[in-house]
Length: 176
Ligand code: ZN
Image (cartoon, rainbow, N blue to C red; front, top):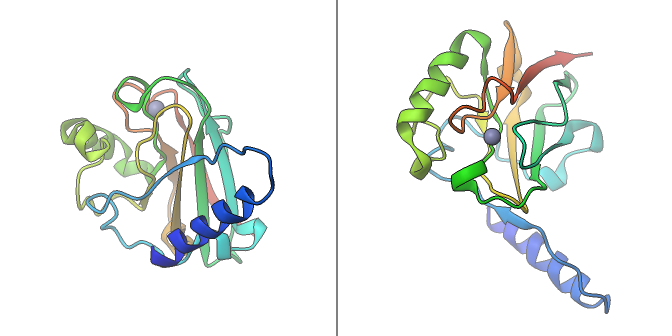
């Protein structure tokens, strides 16, 4: 995490020298209470391009992708969620949570009970393979996970904000 912030600070300094006025994206760091599932100790910046992807969402309940294909040659994979809307997370929050298809309903139901203060993810939920923090309009969040977690079964990604999982969901799978 320290290294990450150091990189972010460097990026800010570099962009500040450019003369223009860039608006740095608001990066939300992982909530420690929801990051307790085994999380890859790798910065997304260090991963090759084929081992990371970006998903967009906005003020409607949707992701811009319905399928995430993860190359099995990647040990770690990073997903960056971008919320291009304007509504704050308490009203139109989004996250990307990954779990086995069989665990999805339980993860969503327990997330609802965990409430906004836990980003709608039950703390220490071992069914959760990866989860970004919950973000609102204008924010961006990244999660990195071990691709070995996607072996042997069907897996989905979804948003655990109340009522969103039915629309905001898709399949995530390992591909050659
Ligand atoms: Zn959502």
